[in-house]
Image (cartoon, rainbow, N blue to C red; front, top):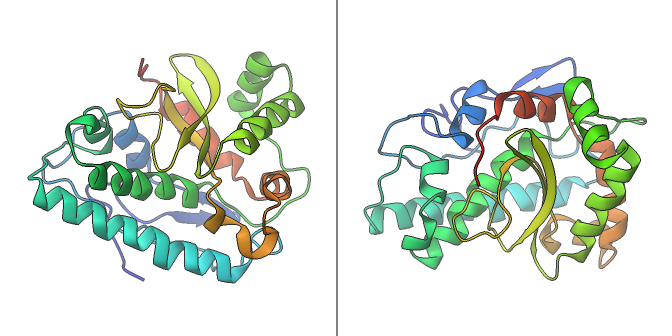
Length: 245
């Protein structure tokens, strides 16, 4: 597993504190457009948990294959495309804001690298009665009526994403919105009709759940709530205030 200094993508490793994964502030800076080195490339996220930490929600083999093979390939291929196409960017948000100008290879793999970086950072060990906290909890109530109503709406979006893709909770100005994107697109891309700054993302590609759940995507979605790191999502919520419309 490659160790990263996160200089261009996420500075510093993720820090494990009180059993929760707290991402470095620079990840939030990156997705709202902070200025970083123009020689931007993706690097493998350093995981501070073990592949079996999320059982029985996600089994260890699925996590290992997902991280090492799928995510690892996205990072490798994204960086190849960045070099081949002489792409210069100040960060991921800058790249995604004009991703339509680049190849399908760069779009798919840069999206895969970024989307998974967010996904890894919002996981924690399974916990019952796992609910949002602080300002995020209040904003979810204000936007969707209740946490249960939010989960129901999010679940419908995730289940309804035809084929491979992602379900998202994004912040757009002071509003929270739920939507989905196909393949490895995300709401920061100029090609996406659903826009916003992602603070929560669920991978609904089959490789994320098929060994354990087969074709039962609904079961995977329902169990996934047990491993959402709401402290981390709150961090992204409070940091990301740029309107992306």
